[in-house]
Length: 264
Image (cartoon, rainbow, N blue to C red; front, side, top):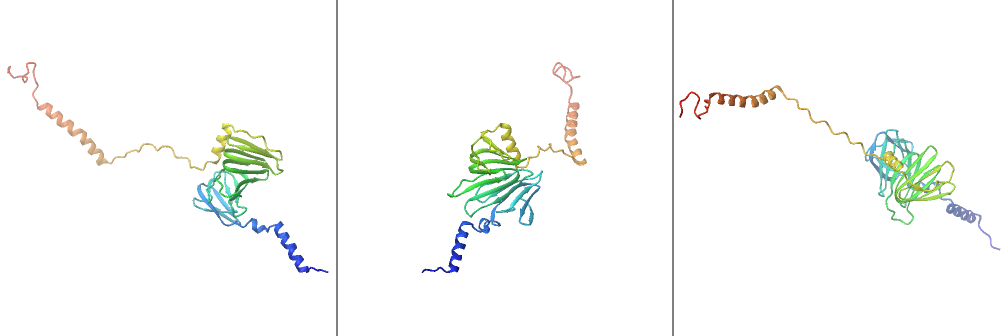
């Protein structure tokens, strides 16, 4: 009769369990690893890194697992190492994570607005997803605007394609120029053409470029006393010379001779 070692049975059970349920640490293996950096910032912007709170400035490194928080007067542009660019609007909280070591990016948009320009995928299992409590948006080769505000998760697709789903699995696909939203626990709206107002609001709400100052007024010249005297002399002296010259020259009569001189 064949018997099995109890220890062997335990090891087999542990192995099967490990395969079915990967350790939590594996999903977070990339946390703390470099993801990109802040490219442009309009204060005030903070980065939550574990228990640390960092002030975001240009060239501040961004790690996987970081949470970017912009104040009502703050915005940030994040350049990821894979070439993707995130424009984070004001009053926004968004986490940046990488589920595996492959070209995968996940944004956890707690609140606010983000516009993402996603780099072209170079790996078969690459992905770029935006998660909110209301649903998930998966994008491919896209320039997409996302907002999560007041129990509404919305997407405007500027370029590429978006697979937009609720947490219950109801989905809709978007192509360039379309808009869709998830409201509460309802299924997504049917994709529709984004209106000019929606497009303008998406651009204005995530633009991070600083507003250029107005053209400066023409310079006001302030002359010293010596400069004023010199300029005055430049004008007065030629006038005096011309006046003396004209006064010393005899007047010419109608006959072509000097006045008071007999006909010549």
